[in-house]
Length: 238
Image 1 (cartoon, rainbow, N blue to C red):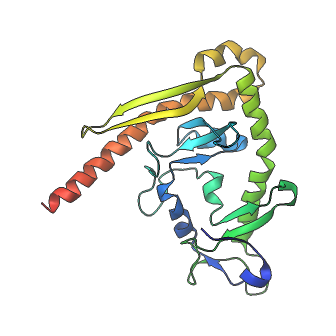
Image 2 (cartoon, rainbow, N blue to C red):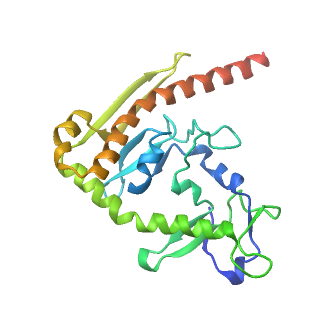
């Protein structure tokens, strides 16, 4: 990666292929989410809680694979999901700086999506910002604006004792195994006990998270299908 601050003087001529930019997620197995997107993203992915390695704080994340560097939703050309998490949709752009109030837009100059023939310019020929880049800025703005609500949501879930660890020992059809540990979920039983004291919007988000864990089964099916395809491919060379 080669993140630099985006400036009109240096980067007005950049063009982006959004599909190629998204290909950077091919080896991403977990993506941080914001409070505002959890309900819609939970219709596609298992939504879990993970702990920040440095701070120890929980954060919500979409689970895309069952092992590090594995994205079972990436089919080689696109993310096979109806909803793309904001932290993927923003690529190849991000926010830089310790203070979000004064954050600057950065761009990864090593992104595969930055290509001369890219269909999405940052600046139009007449000097105006392109509709594509306006959408990027809206996505980055939503990410920045959701930091505090997301933190508050997680703190409330922890204080209500709704967060429980999950551990899965998975056996795949070809005999290989995977262990899913170090992640957390919303306890359905605890949520039902406490739901009367939770506001409706928050309760719906918590329920979406709790129910989305069932989609881990869909991840296992995706992995079995990928393993079968790999076996068929290599078997064809035998």
